[in-house]
Length: 386
Image (cartoon, rainbow, N blue to C red):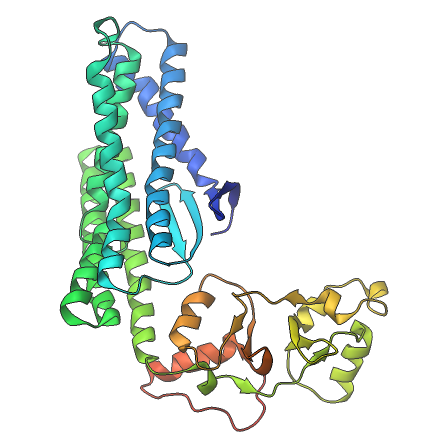
């Protein structure tokens, strides 16, 4: 998601906040300071109302982060790699590099977030109940009570059986357990999610006509998000189902043209132009023949002209890492899941530290399009353009 601000890391997991979170905080602060707090605790000063409202709004965002961290921590315990956690206007999103291997693991990861929200609701309610009588009816009690209700709503709403909500993940895990077909379960769960999203949009429009502008717009936005996300996830599941059994070796370009890491950018560009090489992305090799990185013509073109005669390819290349290296026998569907949130243009195919091929996003899209047409890709017999 673009427009995010890094907040830090937890157990190596990047935590980011989209700029739209500030809009949510501002909206909640205004709503509480002008309506909720004065009605529940009259007699306080305007400064007290605004400070309490801001503290409550920020606390809810922290609770939302706790909800997402619960997903991440439990996923990590099941061996699922967590890519990042992002907070935004309508909630939070925990992005996984891969997925739980069993329905049980999937269900437990899904339920962890709502469980934390409901526990936090209980804790805030307990604090509200045990505060001294001198505070009763004051702003602190009202603030804690609001956080208790807000976390309860967050937990219960997320348990609704509509993907991509956590309840939709639970529905998916149950359907997966019943049928044994993960992708088919995803398609069915996302269909329910789309229906639920459209229902929320309809309710939001009805509230607009009833005079509740803020509530109607908010509900319609949530419904639109749920329906759109469910539709995208369902389409991806259908594609992944069509790629069942397809391996990287079926799609990759074997024995690709390589870029010697010790060459300069200028020398390599001249070689590409004069030799008639039509490729755009190249694996970079060291003296010993081991792949060390990836470089594209776009990368080289972005280098300052005066530096191209001195800069070596291994200095201009993007280093290889687990997210840019795949194995020939790896299922293509797994690579597609990894490629979806990335912008890299290629993967290096390595076996026993030896370069055997290159896989580009164009190769993946070709396989996806063939799958939609009901055909399986066949390993290319000659060089392709990428």
